[in-house]
Picture 1 (cartoon, rainbow, N blue to C red):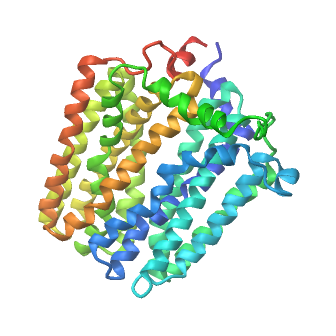
Picture 2 (spheres, rainbow, N blue to C red):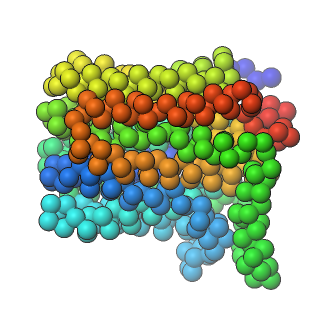
Length: 435
């Protein structure tokens, strides 16, 4: 058995470090079509209802499994011959992401909202395509003993990028303009592009489209079989209902957070410093605490505790609405919200991973995460209408009660399926334990 020091050295290996940089590239666009864009829309006097509807611009993240087989098996003219299958698609998707960032930044939501919406949709599509290829590159380029460190580096890079696209973009917008904020983010995408150009193509054989195989057979192998496998396990409908609902309260909270801060009188720089900067540290700490919860109590009980704590976070926002402008109170609110969100995310990712059959790990995880993402988008889209028709205190109290149904579903599952995972023991977690 290797010592702790030897095990830690895996983070110094080049291929593992490359994944950190690709994680940064993947995480950069998300907030630019979500909360950062919400702040821009609010400042442009767009109604809260319309801001909520803008969350539909990120639907591509929920539907990316639909075109994943194309990205996985269709070669690009010229580029694939020069760079290989994975790197060619990475270069194309990253270049498209950079262009759409600049395009979105060049619009004026106050006078041309539909152009803003179109560019936001295009940015989400380009970014989701990049995510598909980065996931494939990460899995194919790392050895088995590097996968854990590679996944950790990916998440860390992703979180750093979210901090930059959140706090960094707000700081730039406050000092210059929203256009230059988006241009700066596009320039930072060059980190990922340069990484791809300087990194080798994964040493794995890519299965291109077999023209002798019928389209029906391709669809069956890629999409239908993983679904059929999932539907053979007990209570699969309730499992999917839980996956769809678990982030309900958080979705209603997240999409309205920046408009709420601005309504309370906080400047963009104050939001960047407290919500994005300090909040980033709290999220990382919350993620660590979530891992401890899972190790100590198991996945299902960790989900239960994290779900209860997230209800408290929503009530903290209701208290903030009563207090109004107060930096110390904002720090308390952000601490509670980000700690509980980090804990819940860690437990939820562990749960989704445990549900996957080892024979269909990538596909089933993509489908499950897509269900979660689509549900989050759908729920968040109605948040603006609710906020427009009630005061902030009532809104956040309502979001607290909105989280109760998922706790009921979780309690039901805990009584019938106390241990997460496929009934035949073919989960990813089990396979790793056996190695």
